[in-house]
Image (cartoon, rainbow, N blue to C red; front, side, top):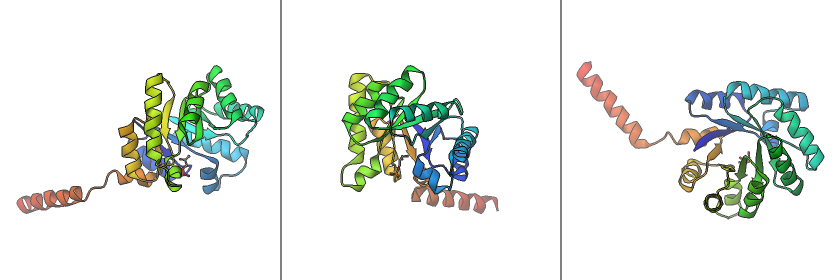
Length: 218
Ligand code: G3P
């Protein structure tokens, strides 16, 4: 399973990349706004900066909702760097655009997936990735992880090549369950990735090893 980081924060991207486990980055308009990145030129430059840090796919989201606008924006984004994946919302014109991009060899990430039906449509259109939003489903009392399991089963039965990118990850259990249920990728905030490191017995065990070494070596 690949690890993407879900942020536009350069310091966090560098920290995850330095760990040696980072396979890519996803962003969205909310994450760009959170970093204070405004205006087309600044947004485009920020995507290039991210691509220059990480050697993996970087999802850049369109803000148009009509077919022509999505195509225009997506082509501009894809031209920025070979690692850019155009992130397109799960709407009717988005599905049409994904089909178009797929025929042109432009890779896509279909975002805002909340049901197996939406996942099937995006896969049929030729999306490279689909992003089911696990945490936002949990927020409204649906089991987000069960959506990952359902989609993984459908894609395996159908032999779809589209990769399941579990998004809206909120904690390390979401990452572990995504691996268990067959997601190809997770995209996560840095804190949930770092939380995978933690176990109290590791800390206690290391403390004892170091104390014993000190006792016998002075
Ligand atoms: O990038 C899309 C998704 O990961 C957003 O997550 O936490 O805003 O639901 P969140």
